Length: 153
Image: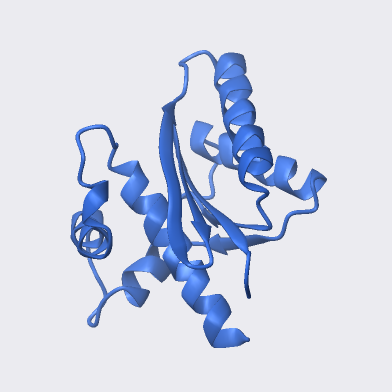
C-alpha cells in the first residue's frame, strides 16, 4: 500500500477541512471558511478540493457525511464534493460521526470534544492557533479510513 494518498474531508455549513495522509501519515492539513453567498461558497469549495487533489495526487477520499440527511447547506456542499470526486473517478469512503465515535473509544464517545482530545494525542502538532477544530474531524476521518483499509486488505 505504498504511495497511497488519502484525502479526508469534513464539510460544515461554513467550512471545509481537509487532511492529506500519505502511507498513513498526516502530510498536510488545512481548512477554508466558505462564503455566506452560496455560489461563492461552491466556487471556494471546488477550488480548494481540486487544488488538493492535483497537488497531492489524491488516490482516495474519506468523507464525513452530514449528521442529518435533510436538505441543508452542509448537505448540498457535501453532495457537490461527492459529485466532483465521482467525476474524477476517485473512490470515496463515506464515514458518519457515529462510526467515528464507536471506532475511537470503548465505550463509544459521546461528544466531538472527546474525539478531538484523542486526535490531539495522535498528532499534538495540530494543537495550533492556526488550525480550526474542524481539522481534528478531518484527521479523525482519515485515520479511521486508513485503519479500515488495513483491516480489510
